[in-house]
Image (cartoon, rainbow, N blue to C red; front, side, top):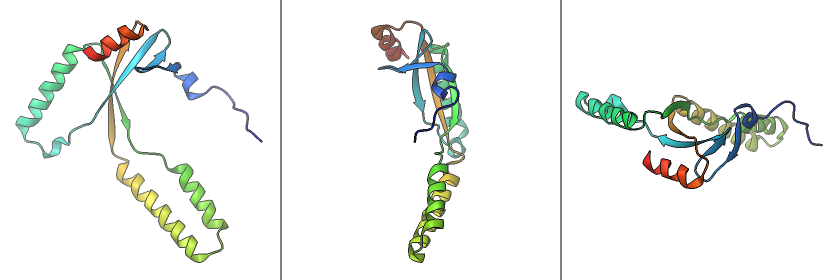
Length: 141
């Protein structure tokens, strides 16, 4: 028996109309996303950090209307962990329970390792929704 959804979906709440060839259609605009991998600056010299900051400033000044978002990059393992816990409870074979417990420990360790990881996204808004205009802006950015 299927559960009925209550309320709006996340997509509805944040206004995403559809995925496009280049990004997301949101309202009358299209958002183009660029994932940026951060550098571990704790291992860089002061000079190299200054160079990286200057390069970032040049990018941001070339595209002044760009938006930046930072998100946690860790995966959510809650569903998998709940499933494994229920399997452990239902399992009669002690050896299988031990293997499942190891799987659960492994998921915990992965989640702990990635909990401080960050992802940065540069977001460019394109007012035109014509595919060729969006592609032009994406290439320029």
